[in-house]
Length: 241
Image 1 (spheres, rainbow, N blue to C red):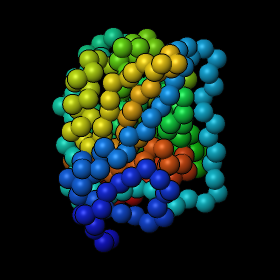
Image 2: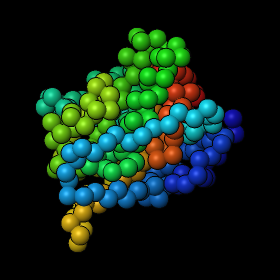
Image 3: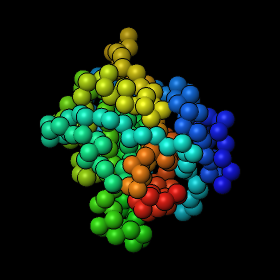
C-alpha cells in the first residue's frame, strides 16, 4: 500500500481506493472537514430515523493512518447518568468513535443508522459471530451537551441501536478530546431565525482492539452502510480493512 503523508481529507466525493495519511496531516485538515448542521428549535418529536440504502456494490472507503491516534483520555457521563471512562471501558475492544448531536437533521442520524444497518447485515451474512460483534463499541459523543442530556441521548440512540454508547459532559472537555483525534467542533449557536446551527467534523474513527489506537478514519457523511459492513469484520480483529 502506497502511503501519502502530504495529503489532507476534505468533504466531497468518495475516493475509490485506499489511502494512508499521517496523523499530523489529518489534524491539519480538521478545520476543512466541518459540516454545518442546521436544526429547528430543538423539537425532535416524530422525526424519522434517516433512510439507509444497501447498495449492491461496495468500494473502499477507509483511510488507514500511518501514525495512529491515541484514544482520547476522556471521562464523561453515559446515558444512565454514570461516569464513563473511555479508555478504561473500551480497553482491548474495537471501537468506532463519532462526535455529533441528537438534533442534527441529516449527517449524524444517517451516520449512526448506517453503522446500525451494517451491524445487522454482518450478522445476516454471517461475516461475524454474535460474540465478535458484541465486542464492537460504537461510541457517540455529543457536541451539544447543553441539550443532549443523558436521557435525551439514551432515547435517541435507542432508536438507532440499543447497544450504542452515548456520552455527554462539559463542552470544553468534549472539544479538547475531539481535537486530540483531529476532529474540529464548535459550540452550537442560535441563528437570527431561531434555528440552531452546529459545526462539527464528520469523521468516524476506528480504534484497534490490539493497540487501542485510532488507525482508520471514515467520512461519516459519505460512507455507506455496506462499506462499514465490508470493513468491520477486519476492524473487529484489529486488521487493516
